[in-house]
Length: 67
Image (cartoon, rainbow, N blue to C red):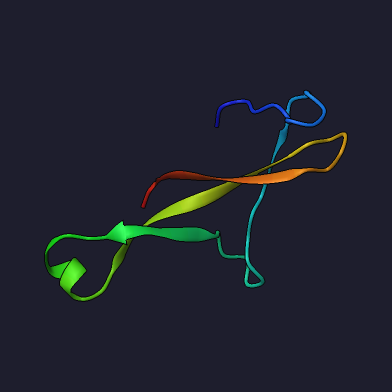
C-alpha cells in the first residue's frame, strides 16, 4: 500500500488491520458481474485497507483491488 499522509497532522499514516467481529476482512460491493455469476446476483468486491494517524488517531479506509 502506498504511504498516505494525515490531512490534519501531515505525518505518515500507519497501516491498521480492518476486520469484522468474526475476524473476517471487510469488503465492499463495487458493481455487478457479467455472465452467469452476474445473473446469480453476485457482485464484484474490493477489500478495505485501513490507515491510522499515530498523532491524532484519524482512521481512513481505502478500497484495494477487486476480488
